[in-house]
Amino acid sequence: MTETEITNYLCNEYGECRHNAYAMAEAINQTREDMDYDNEWDLFHLLVENKPITALNTHSYGFHTSNGRGIIERIKSYYYEFNGN
Image (tube, rainbow, N blue to C red; front, side):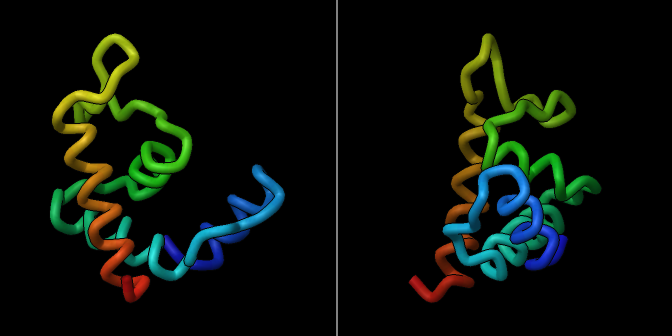
């Protein structure tokens, strides 16, 4: 996943990209590597649009599972690290 892909997606879908696309791409890629999970777009959609990832059991009855919350928190932690905050 690249900074450009994130910027293009957010601009096309939401009209703007308010986030640091570089930090987001790095955070998602690092989380994907940590988890040994192949689809970075699933992680992106979980973070941005709250879309469930069935294979990772991120939701139950429409709510985040502890695993789903953990994945989101890991991405956020890396995001802040790469963003310099």
